[in-house]
Structures are given as C-alpha cells and as structure tokens.
Amino acid sequence: MFGELMSNSMEKPIVSIILRTKNEACALEKVLESIFKQRLDLTFEVIVIDSGSTDATLDIARRFKTRIYEIDSTEFSFGFSLNFGIGKAEGGIVICLSGHCIPVDTQWMKRLVAPLLADVDIAATFGRQEPIKGLNPLEEIMLLNQFSPDVYGEIKVVFSNANCAIRKQVLVSHPFDEVAVAAEDFIWARTLPDGLGIQYVHDASVYHSHPLSLEYWSKRFYRDAFFREYIKGVYDLEWQGMIPGYDASGLFVKLLKQLEWGVRGISDMVLYMTKNRYFKQMLLVPVFVALFHFNNWKGGRDGKRKYGGS
Image 1 (cartoon, one colour):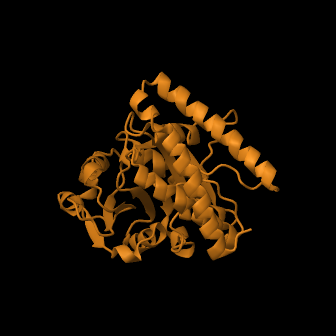
Image 2 (cartoon, one colour):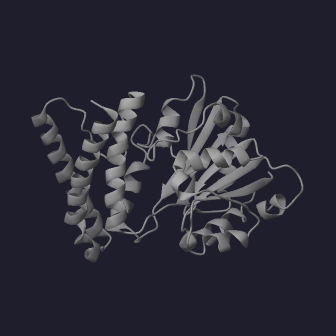
Image 3 (cartoon, helix red, strand yellow):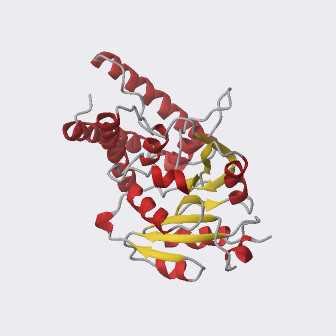
C-alpha cells in the first residue's frame, strides 16, 4: 500500500519522521515527494523542525501533509532539534532524516524499520548515504569510502542520524546530547546502554551531498575538530569523523601520520577525479587539503582550550 494513503488516515502513526531543516528549498521537495511515495503497510507522520529558514523551505513543507515546528536559530543544535521533534512525535519508531537527504527508492522506509519490528533488542538502525554524482567530487570520495564495506562486511561509520530509525522509548530515556554541534549521533551510539543494538541497513539508502563550497567545508572542518575535543574531554571517547588519526604519542609520529594521510588522501582524490573526468574540480584539491589541515588544527586547538582534552 502507498505510504501516502496510509499517512492520511486517522489512525495513530506507527512511525514519526523528523526532518531537520534550514534553507533546504533546493532539496526538500524531492525529499518529501520520495517520503510520500514510500510503499509500506505502516502509518506514518512527517514532522518538520525548522531553525530559521529564509528561503522557500516552509512554503514547500506546507504543500505536503506535515506538522511544522519552528525553533530559533540561536537554540539550534542537531541534538536539540531532534530531541524537540521527538517530544512531538506520536509514533513508537522515530526516523531522523536530514532535510536534504533524498530516499533513493520506495522501499527505503520499509527496509529501515524492518529490523526494529523483527527484533526487540535492536534499538536503532541506520542506512547508507550515497553521493549525488558530480555535485561535490571531494565529498563523493569520502562518502563512498565511509559506506563501503571492508573484507569483513563492516563500514567505517558507527552511526548516523542523517538517515536512521530509533525506538522512541529508547530516545526518551537516552536523548541526544544538545551541547555538541557535531557527532551527537556518535556520542549517542557510543553511550547506548548495554544490551541495545544498532544495525546498519545497506539498502535503506538516501542521496546525501553538500555543495562544493569552500566556506561550508572550512566551517565543518573547524567544527568537527573542535567537538572532537569536546567528546574527548566530556565523554573520554575518541572520535575521528573525517579527521585522520591524531592519537599517536609524540610530535614526530603525529607529523608522520598526518603526512602519510595527506599524501594518500590527495593521491586517492586525484585518481578518482581523473577516472570520473572531474578535471575542473581537481584544481580545488590543494585548496581543499590546505583548508582541511588549517581548520583541523585551529578547531582542535580551540577545543582543547575549552574542554581540556588531552
């Protein structure tokens, strides 16, 4: 049965989809169209948590059967917006989806929630994130690397709330960290009580890409490094995200590891971009790498000063 028909019924929803948005007009219509074309036999609702959009995001959301809540941009963190939405959710299963993550097919939701319906010991699932071909070749390489299974069938991502499903009762007792503005999903997964499992669902996939904006990536590299120190100082957890390993002792060893990662990373990017004929974007590789290392250093320095990570 079409999800669109099920979601319009008066029956209480089984699944609540929380969309975090801010200026998502470019992608939101495709996201919502894909959601309301889902084929499954479960009722669902769509909740939009917007944190100050100034484009057509809210107009687009109003064209669909959604519930919209607005929060002030000064209150925003990924954790706060999700916890706020969870408090409004009526379903026993909550799907967290970024406002620009587009489900790739009509089976996405069914596949994402199936493990939760089959096994009470599974607290959460998360799905694959595929790049939009050609939009951002640099991020394209990262996503393909992060979500490609190794020889043991494992992926590098621990958990991601850009595309996940979680039991609401678990979220109520174990909410997201509202201070962290990066890796709140990693913190949530790593501090999940014993006995509760997380399952990766490779075929519950979404398209997830960010434009090739040097300003965006500069801020993101800084943010990730800054809150790597928060995670270390507050939770005593090591989080790398897109940051290479800096946990070796001794300055010389650290510099060698950074050099090794940099050479290997640049080589992989150039080979991939040559193969896919991304010749114009290839010119940005040295700029991208320079921004990465500068903002990683700066964010890590500032994070250590504030949170005292070792």
